[in-house]
Length: 130
Image 1 (cartoon, rainbow, N blue to C red):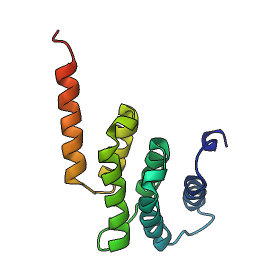
Image 2 (image 1 turned 135 degrees about the vertical axis):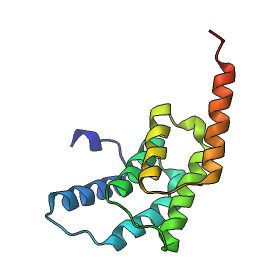
Image 3 (image 1 turned 90 degrees about the vertical axis):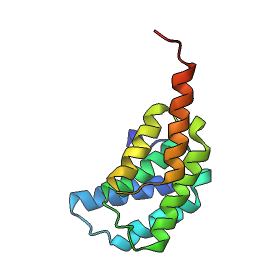
Image 4 (image 1 turned 30 degrees about the vertical axis):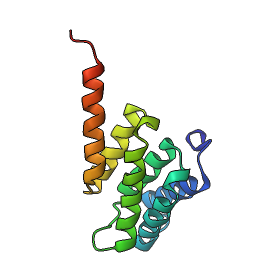
């Protein structure tokens, strides 16, 4: 499909699994989504911001149950840690999508929120007064 062009194989596989789950043709086990969060987090530094957003959005769409699962939690922590250090690589829309996906997962990361807060504060100070 056109929206799949340029995405990594991991993101493509996750999109296919999500489509199959949403269509009802395949029951994707919850363990798949937990492993995806863990492995995706391990690869966070190699993914583009778009791929990261797509992957975390897919986990949110799949209603990942990360609470109580150390591997999935660790994966989300890695996604958040990488995003907080690479804020400049994300467009405002991508960062909004990323944070919204984490919110849909009911996941918060204090370091990411502080980094975002500082970035917004710097941007507001840089804007000329109206």
